[in-house]
Image (cartoon, rainbow, N blue to C red; front, top):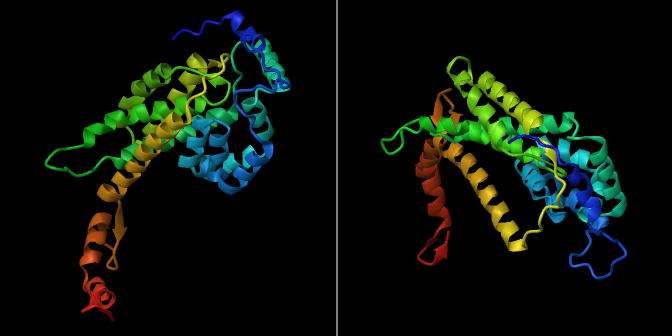
Amino acid sequence: MSRKHNSSDTNYVTSRTYNNSDKTKVHAEKSLYITYLLWLVGGIFGVHHFYLGRDIQGFLWWCTLGGYFGFGWLRDIFHIQNYVADANKDRDYLDKFNHNLRSYKYPPFSTIRFTGMTVVAYLWSTVVSMAIPEEDIGGLPWKYLHFLLPIACALGVWSVGNIGHETGTIWWCLAAAYACYPVYWYVDESTACTVMVLASALAFDTLSKRWQTKPKPRKRFLRRCLTIGACALLYSSLWGSYLYFNAKITDGEGEEIPLNEAIHHFFKSPWWVDLLAVELPRDGVVS
């Protein structure tokens, strides 16, 4: 987990041949116009990032509705040309990247990226916390699953930290998250989560972050779809668990009742039964 700098890494990208005049490319170039169109139509769900092969960023846009409710989506409009140039291994873009490699031993601090790490880590930690059933299910307590919160926190930090040409291992931010987990025993959950998230992000940025000098291997389309689909299913299931087990609504008398009970009572209500009786066919004739 040490951050040793290999001087040969700065020459790795330039040593590869990315000749834009080569007409025998295996992978078709990405279109700037299609990228702008996808940004406009489905950019809030990260469609343009998926098109460019930036799957991590695309998934983050999907689960945060455009990078924190559209902020990242709007910011992308100023960076799409660079994203496309990166996807196409444009010579001028790579020259600029190699200049950064020679100028900075490690990636410089980025306020936007650090903020993104804290926002996503806080969101994922909160979603996992909300998804854990508050009551015993099947006679078994589930509150011990709160011990998984540091993992959700570290995954959020690591995911944002591995976007683009920066990378790093998950171990430092995971260790920092677990080191701060006992704070939950002494302060409220919101404060404890904030401390854990900041410590994890600082650990990644200080101890783990480095340049991604080797081009990431291209994955098969089917494998990409399965990976993204599995992540989306897991994230959606967390929200589903929250809605089914923990979500509550306030009735007309001002009392809170579980959402699942409210839905169950709705489908058992006389109003719903009467509605079905009117709509369903009777003796082959619809009333």
